[in-house]
Amino acid sequence: MYWDKTHETMDRADLELLQLARLRETLQVALNSPFYRERLQQAGVTPENISSLEDISRIPFTTKDDLRSQGQALLARPLADMVRLHASSGTTGQATVIYYTREDIATWAELLARSMYMTGLRPGDVFQNMMGYGLFTGGLGFHYGAECLGALTIPVGPGNSQRQVQLMQQFGTTAVHIIPSYALYLLTTFAHMGVDPRSLPLRLAFVGAEPHTEDVRRRIEEAYGLKAYNSYGLSELNGPGVAFECPEQKGMHVWEDHFLLEVLDPQTLKPLPPGEVGEVVLTNLSRQGMPVLRYRTRDLAAVEPGDCACGRSHRRLSRIQGRSDDMLIIKGVNIFPMQIEQVLMAMPEVETNYLVELKRENFNDLMLVKVEVREGFFKEDLRHLHALQKKITAALKSELLVTPKVELVEPQTLPRSEGKALRIVDLR
Ligand code: ADP
Ligand code: ZN
Image 1 (cartoon, rainbow, N blue to C red):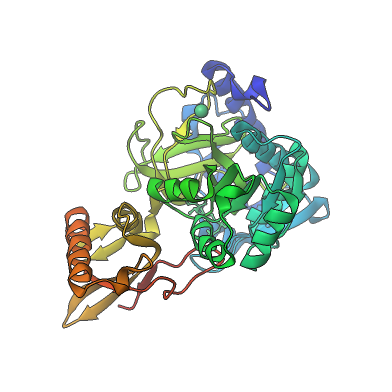
Image 2 (cartoon, helix red, strand yellow):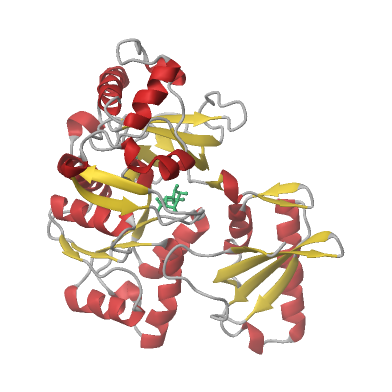
């Protein structure tokens, strides 16, 4: 049941001692990088004067801009010691580049093996990795993890949907790694090919890389007849394998022997208690080539209160609600895209794809929500369509406190992405 029982179930007190020791080691390593040498010196931080985990508040934050502008100045070892680089997918601007030593690659693989083993993946499973290979960390990260665990790995990458289905049939795929919006999209391919995904031996899906709601997870589980586990990570900290759901499916365990987790109030930057949503700030505790200290992820989540029934002592992070820079301000009201998804995906009449367009009309913000409705709906009476449109508008208004304009469209008419879904278009 555990890949690494000692570390996964370690007493909190022992885990925190280990974290403190590793934090000090990491500071020592970081001091080899020109960027951190200067930063830490300015802040008066040395490994010796960090004597408790609370002292982390004395370490300056690292931002995406630091990574972009400083580049190789973050390296704590000579470039010749690096064996790989990745770049973040650049969802929110210019990509950041991350370097790994051989040890870093091995540790990362180990963390993903631990994560997938936790959900029940075992040698003998056939793992189809439908995440992008290449600069994006999702593909190779899981690939090395699955090989480390001992699963037969199919390195197919995303896209080419018919082939995905054929590979599943041919090799008896039991586990997939897939972006949630693509998992929903792929269902239309199954339908076109006349294949019922539930008839395949699929039993596990690792879904992540983009925010998604509980309803989306349930839809994936239902349609494919499997268990879907949320997976969180970001290239700045390695890639996937930072936090992962256990069979309880009540939040993602952050691997705290390798990452120091803080959830901070984004305004005051003070720690928040469990249950309160704030900005996730992470510090590498085992990275050799390019340790990153107090990285402001801009991802918003809360620590789940209480212990997990699975016996792991590592704290759990709630679903990521979005990035702080994803927050929309419409008519002065703050809205997160996931609030919209939550309302839409709870409605059985609604298909899996939607698009939100923001416009200015007569000096006013206008939110247009385009929603694909289920096959067959357009053949129905116009009154039904109007009723559904009204129902969606009312539900969105009660959640968002802003009245959107809702447009119903036929299934498969909105643009699709094989990578992270594009849900919001701001034309203001
Ligand atoms: P980019 O920041 O360019 O998208 P990455 O590929 O490193 O680069 O993506 C990491 C980001 O993806 C995270 O910071 C987070 O915003 C998002 N993400 C990753 N996994 C999840 C997940 N399980 N749920 C929600 N968001 C996620
Ligand atoms: Zn658990």
